[in-house]
Amino acid sequence: MPSAAINYLGYERRTDDTTIAHLKKRTTQANKASLNVRTILKRLPNLPIKRQLHIANACIRTVFLYGTEACLDEAIEELKHEMNVIMRKTARQILRTSYAPAN
Image 1 (cartoon, rainbow, N blue to C red):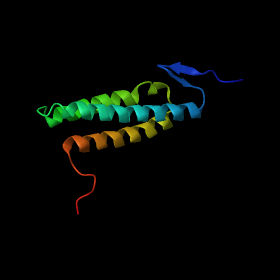
Image 2 (image 1 turned 180 degrees about the vertical axis):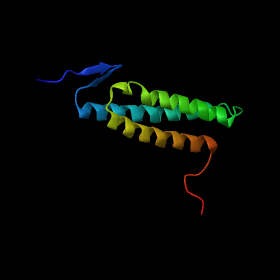
Image 3 (image 1 turned 90 degrees about the horizontal axis):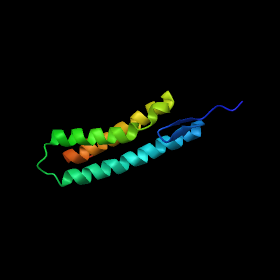
Image 4 (image 1 turned 120 degrees about the horizontal axis):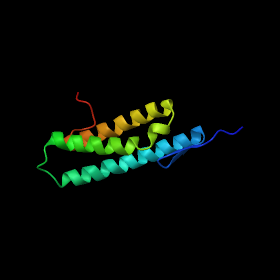
Protein backbone atom coordinates (compact mmCIF):
# COMPACT_ATOMS: atom_id res chain seq x y z
CA MET A 1 0.00 0.00 0.00
CA PRO A 2 1.57 3.35 -1.00
CA SER A 3 2.17 5.75 1.83
CA ALA A 4 0.26 9.00 1.87
CA ALA A 5 2.22 12.10 0.97
CA ILE A 6 2.63 14.80 3.58
CA ASN A 7 1.99 18.28 2.22
CA TYR A 8 3.08 21.11 4.51
CA LEU A 9 3.85 24.73 3.57
CA GLY A 10 4.57 23.85 -0.04
CA TYR A 11 6.75 20.85 0.84
CA GLU A 12 5.38 17.48 -0.19
CA ARG A 13 7.23 14.56 1.37
CA ARG A 14 6.76 11.40 -0.62
CA THR A 15 10.22 9.84 -0.58
CA ASP A 16 13.70 10.63 0.65
CA ASP A 17 14.41 12.17 -2.77
CA THR A 18 11.78 14.85 -2.21
CA THR A 19 13.32 15.61 1.18
CA ILE A 20 16.76 16.01 -0.38
CA ALA A 21 15.35 18.22 -3.12
CA HIS A 22 13.58 20.34 -0.51
CA LEU A 23 16.76 20.74 1.53
CA LYS A 24 18.75 21.74 -1.56
CA LYS A 25 16.08 24.31 -2.36
CA ARG A 26 16.23 25.67 1.20
CA THR A 27 20.03 25.91 0.98
CA THR A 28 19.87 27.76 -2.35
CA GLN A 29 17.27 30.17 -1.02
CA ALA A 30 19.28 30.78 2.15
CA ASN A 31 22.37 31.61 0.07
CA LYS A 32 20.27 34.12 -1.86
CA ALA A 33 18.92 35.55 1.39
CA SER A 34 22.46 35.86 2.74
CA LEU A 35 23.55 37.81 -0.32
CA ASN A 36 20.51 40.07 -0.14
CA VAL A 37 20.97 40.75 3.57
CA ARG A 38 24.65 41.61 3.09
CA THR A 39 23.74 43.94 0.21
CA ILE A 40 21.18 45.73 2.36
CA LEU A 41 23.50 45.95 5.37
CA LYS A 42 26.25 47.50 3.23
CA ARG A 43 23.89 50.42 2.66
CA LEU A 44 23.58 50.89 6.43
CA PRO A 45 27.17 51.50 7.54
CA ASN A 46 26.16 53.16 10.83
CA LEU A 47 24.18 50.15 12.02
CA PRO A 48 26.06 48.46 14.89
CA ILE A 49 27.78 45.17 14.02
CA LYS A 50 25.86 43.29 16.71
CA ARG A 51 22.56 44.43 15.21
CA GLN A 52 23.74 43.52 11.69
CA LEU A 53 24.63 40.01 12.84
CA HIS A 54 21.28 39.64 14.59
CA ILE A 55 19.37 40.71 11.46
CA ALA A 56 21.40 38.41 9.22
CA ASN A 57 20.98 35.40 11.53
CA ALA A 58 17.23 35.98 11.85
CA CYS A 59 16.72 36.26 8.10
CA ILE A 60 18.86 33.28 7.14
CA ARG A 61 17.48 31.02 9.87
CA THR A 62 13.89 31.86 8.84
CA VAL A 63 14.56 30.99 5.21
CA PHE A 64 16.31 27.75 6.16
CA LEU A 65 13.71 26.47 8.56
CA TYR A 66 10.60 27.30 6.52
CA GLY A 67 8.61 24.12 6.05
CA THR A 68 11.16 21.80 7.62
CA GLU A 69 8.81 20.62 10.36
CA ALA A 70 7.72 17.81 8.06
CA CYS A 71 11.27 16.70 7.20
CA LEU A 72 12.95 13.68 8.70
CA ASP A 73 15.23 14.15 11.72
CA GLU A 74 18.31 13.03 9.80
CA ALA A 75 17.57 15.63 7.15
CA ILE A 76 17.15 18.31 9.81
CA GLU A 77 20.64 17.58 11.16
CA GLU A 78 22.11 17.96 7.66
CA LEU A 79 20.17 21.20 7.23
CA LYS A 80 21.46 22.58 10.54
CA HIS A 81 25.03 21.95 9.40
CA GLU A 82 24.41 23.77 6.10
CA MET A 83 22.70 26.60 7.98
CA ASN A 84 25.67 27.02 10.31
CA VAL A 85 28.09 27.11 7.37
CA ILE A 86 26.16 29.86 5.61
CA MET A 87 25.62 31.82 8.82
CA ARG A 88 29.35 31.70 9.66
CA LYS A 89 30.21 32.79 6.12
CA THR A 90 27.78 35.71 6.37
CA ALA A 91 29.12 36.70 9.79
CA ARG A 92 32.71 36.70 8.48
CA GLN A 93 31.68 38.94 5.61
CA ILE A 94 29.82 41.34 7.91
CA LEU A 95 32.80 41.45 10.28
CA ARG A 96 35.14 41.78 7.27
CA THR A 97 37.46 39.02 8.47
CA SER A 98 39.47 36.67 6.29
CA TYR A 99 38.67 33.02 5.68
CA ALA A 100 42.19 31.85 6.33
CA PRO A 101 43.28 30.97 9.86
CA ALA A 102 45.99 33.02 11.49
CA ASN A 103 49.50 31.60 11.40
